[in-house]
Image (cartoon, rainbow, N blue to C red; front, side):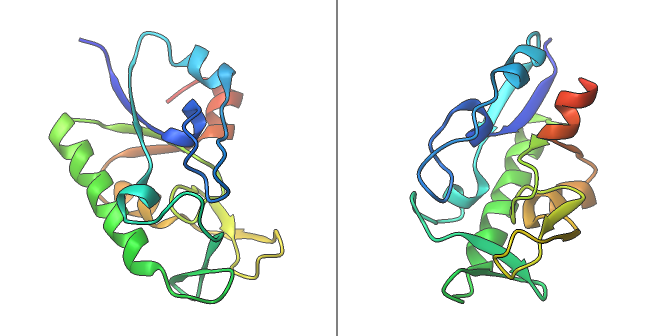
Length: 146
């Protein structure tokens, strides 16, 4: 049986980013050969549209660039992501670096000025708390290991 890996859908070419585009990385797809890839976008599943306003984590909440609190959407998406992992027995996830949902280790600071701070996105944090191994796409490409 192939190892199942949850992957941020934008990394696989799905146009689900806030700006309606994607973050397709052919090298990532190549390195995942031999595994069962499960694409997922917690922001879309959480009820946000594509395109949508950019959002960042600020003071424990997720706000969009107009200051609107969209935390509930991010939490809903994180919970659905965890539920999918549990239903399918997924133990590993490759998530989009710096994202307010998927970022691992570093995320934008909530000022919309490209400043990074230590921390995890809402989905990444929930998965980690529930025993799912999370790695950001950049680290995966550097190491090739999950």
